Length: 113
Image (cartoon, rainbow, N blue to C red):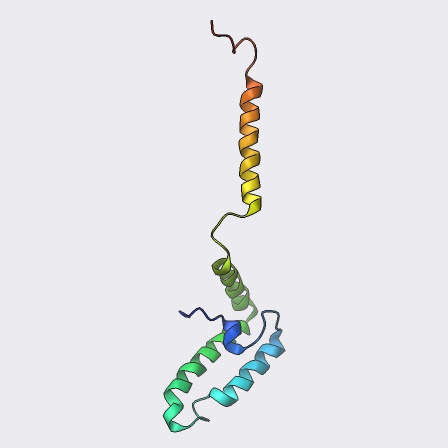
């Protein structure tokens, strides 16, 4: 799917929905959006909408496909800036390198002669 709408939004359900809730949402939407139940002048738009609904259902109803989709969705929604933990880790590493450098020096190597 190229749009920014998640599959959960397509079905109108929360990410915490179970299999029965996913199936119920699909059936509810299929009854209203299927090309066979809409008027003739809305068939093409309805067909496109129904394809999106069916794709969302086929992905979210399969546990393996859903796990992969959720992982990808999480990766897409992660911010690009570094987290505070990453910054703290970098600071700790830098402090360690500095203290390690200081501890390697002693009075014999610190003399200028």
